[in-house]
Length: 411
Ligand code: NAP
Image 1 (cartoon, rainbow, N blue to C red):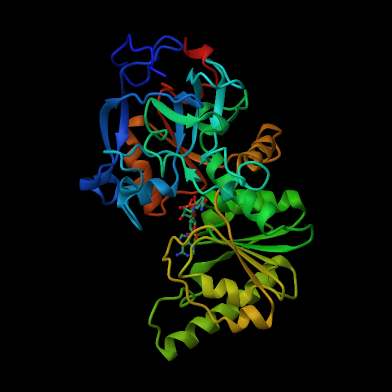
Image 2: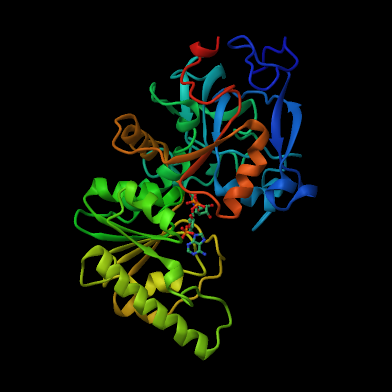
């Protein structure tokens, strides 16, 4: 569908008339020749505004949430996303709150002017997995803003209509943009994949990070007991505010992190640290055994500890490997004690709606701790790469200042 291109470009922080799509737009792009840390890889450019397909929607991005996938996209590691989608540039951003600005001619559920948040799962909508099983099994499943080129760090973002969800009316644009990716991922991991039950205990790595703060809140809602792993007293306080029953500072356990090619002495030091760490968990959870569920994402450095300390018949649910992808662990702990390792990746639309409903009803709080100006989007990713943040970070895009909640406030 061709857009209504009567306006060439509008400055950041201003809006074109509702429904009028400028020919070009401001965007933060990543290109192959700039792969590296965020301050090098992210650059502000003016690019052509994307053209809509029949089932697609062009959303004016008021604010965009920061996720680790933007860091990976900039680094070009473990793969360059530009090689995957083959577009000359990549606009990151897999979280967004904004306004429907144009709809494709097959879109029925949404109209121009609707205020929305987006989930980041794209699927074909036609295969058997999409129609009756689990859309996360779709062969064409992709993460918008990572495996697709037009994410939310631009004035307009191109999405499938099924990605749209209602935005809470009392929530600012920046807060509404901050939560969807990590909330929905944690929701699927704990509720649908690990099938967490009331009374069970959960070890949450990165308990004051994006995934972790939602994991603690979800575990509490289920009636389980989350214990958060953190790396500072400030992060411990944050995790407690978001529902942790107790915290463990991983810095109190030197030698706990696995590193490849370890010597026998180093291995003994790590196992001793893991045993002490396990005892700290039991104390914090007030239990006599290891965690029923381990919420994993740091990967290489923590995975052997996760498998070792999980309770008999426990589940280790994992969605990432920030510290390294080659995981080593002693498999005897897995089979002798009949533990399960469960892979999980984002969430399908119905799970996202269930999770978003918890936000709309106030049962889960977004854990946004900082808002960056549009000009500071690269710096926001640099803070995330260097673990200088807590909870979720958000960036203004078209919203001219923080605190705004509706389109009408800006017209
Ligand atoms: P985040 O906000 O940076 O939080 C991660 C937390 O993990 C940090 O706050 C840090 O907490 C802890 N951590 C970092 N490195 C660690 C290490 N080596 N050992 C132990 N703990 C460590 O990031 P996030 O948004 O939660 O995302 C975490 C990972 O999950 C990223 O790799 C991201 O790409 C991935 N992810 C995957 C999916 C998916 O669908 N597959 C979805 C969302 C996120 P402390 O320093 O306080 O311990």
